[in-house]
Image (cartoon, rainbow, N blue to C red; front, side, top):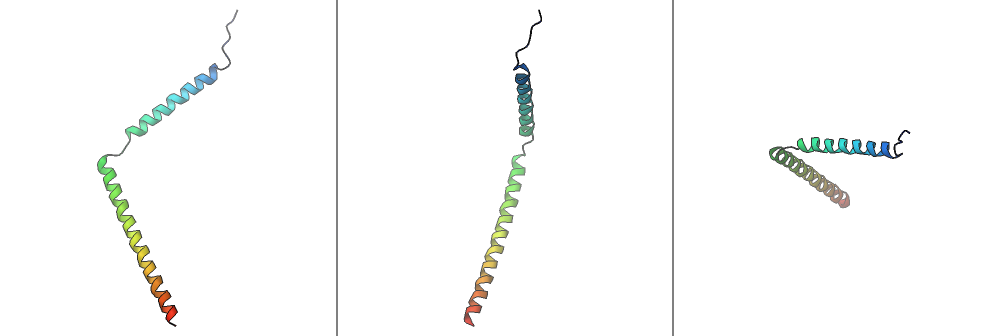
Length: 74
């Protein structure tokens, strides 16, 4: 008499292998985290870029205001 496997055995094995692969990918990503120095330099660069964008936007708004005020004077 041959012993038959349960019909869900392949599914459970596939899920197990998938879980192991996901865990290995998570461990790999966590090992690749940047250092504190890299994070600080990236944050500083982002703050600088944001400040420059904000200044450019404020200057553009001032120019629009001057143009609108000049158009109203006519």
